[in-house]
Image 1 (tube, rainbow, N blue to C red):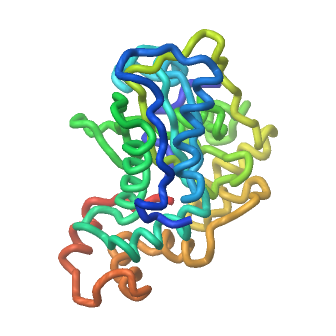
Image 2 (image 1 turned 90 degrees about the vertical axis):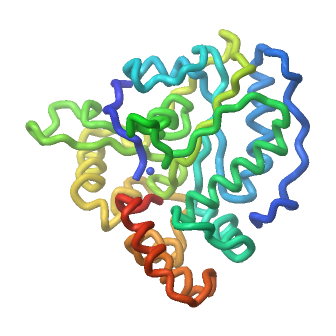
Image 3 (image 1 turned 180 degrees about the horizontal axis):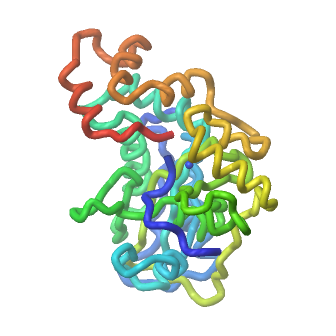
Length: 297
């Protein structure tokens, strides 16, 4: 894999708290070395909590991620530390987001999807790993330097979850000096998914027997990669890049309507669906619009 550009990445049940299964703690506060079987247990705990809500979980070593990045963007944890990357699938909107809005509503002016994802992930983490030392980072969070807290597409690639296709993956590319941003493709969902969070375990290390899995190369031809990158960079609004491979599931029409709506107008859309009070929140919508660059899904 070639080194990724300095970019934040992808823009590739019931949500009630009492529906989360009660999980056991992975281990005590003491540091432990995890075997492949331990990794499957850790991943399985979180997956069991989040899969019914439309999320997927993939493990990785911090060193796999750090090896592709400059020092300024690396994670501070040791290279053999365990991390988990969390993806949302097309099912998340109906299984988690809409129930979340019906039960809890939107608090403040931050992105409603981000609020939902944070609620789902932090609730699952607190129930599955009580007492664990975890650094939880979300795709929308920035460091004081305004750099992203983690590069979502790089994390997805090194975990084997999705292949991160970049300009450097196209031999003799036709774009001359033009910069073409990369995009991840999921082996089952194509581009109909998003990378939402990274969890880094401060007291769980992975042994040398844990081998990095290669991400499935869903777009192996030069022509296909050119088509993908041009669709993503030049025609991203029509979402055709998401169908670069036949997906097993795509976004529902309601979900497409939501993500196609400009961020400043999404509060009005949610109100029209009966998920927000009818009173005018123009100031909130304006504040939200100023804080968003276009939304993501």
